[in-house]
Amino acid sequence: MPIQLYYFQLRGRAQAIRYLLIDNGLEYEEINVGPEWATKWKAETPFGQCPMIKDGDLKLAQSCAILRYFGRKAGIDPSDLVSAARVDMINDHEEDIRNAYVKLIYQNYDAGKADFVKDAAAKVKFLEDLFKAGGNEFILSKISWADYNLFDLLDILCILSPGFLDQSPSLKAYYDRIAARPAIKAFRESDRNMKAVNGNGKQ
Ligand code: 0HH
Image (cartoon, rainbow, N blue to C red; front, side, top):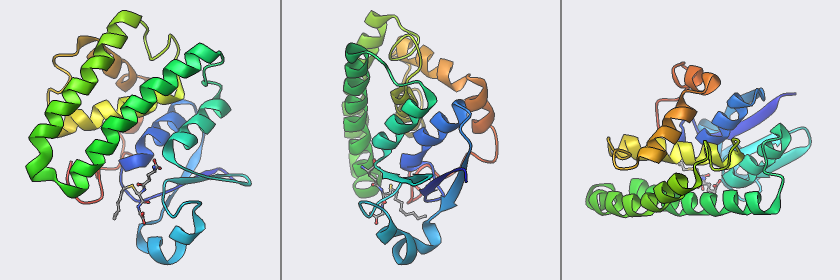
C-alpha cells in the first residue's frame, strides 16, 4: 500500500509534505477528509487534527514530525549534530511566522493583514541575512526536509503580499531554485496542485 496523506482538499499544512514526497519520488495517495472529517476521521488521528499520514503500520500527525520522518526516509535528513540544529532552528522560526499567518487567515484577515505583513517582513529579514551569510544553495548545502516547509511559507507570503521577496535577493534566489526543481515545477503546473490555499477562501 502506498503512503496515504490525510488532509482537506487544500494546500494548508499538507503542502510542504506534498513537495517533499514528490521531489523525492515517494509515491502517495491523497485521502480527502473534508466530507467526513468530524464523523469519520477526526477520532482516527493521534491529536484530532490533520495532516496525518499512514505508512505501513505507522500513523503519524504533526506536519513537522511528518516532514522529518519523510526526510529521514528519503535520506535528506542532516546527519551531523550542528547541521541538524541549524535546520531545526530555521524551521522553528518558519513555524513562528506560519502560526501567525494561520491566525491572520482564520481570525483577523482584514484588520490584521498590514501589521502581519510588516511583522513577517521583519522576521524574514533575519532569514535573508542568514542565507546571505551562509552562502548555501539551501538551508544547508544540500536540500533537507525543512526546505520544503520554508519554500511553502515563502510561497504563501508572496501570494498574500505580491513582491514580498523583492527586498530579499538571497531568499528570492533560494525560492526560485526550489520552484525550478523539475518535479516541483511539474507538480505546481499540474491539476494535482490544489487551488485552495486555505480552508476559508482567504489567501
Ligand atoms: N500543529 C499541527 C500541524 O502542524 C496543526 C494542524 C492543524 O491545525 O500539523 N490542523 C487543522 C487543519 S489545518 C485541523 O485538523 C487548517 C485548515 C482548516 C480547514 C478546515 C476547513 C476545510 C473545509 C474544506 N483542523 C480540524 C480540527 O481541528 O478539527
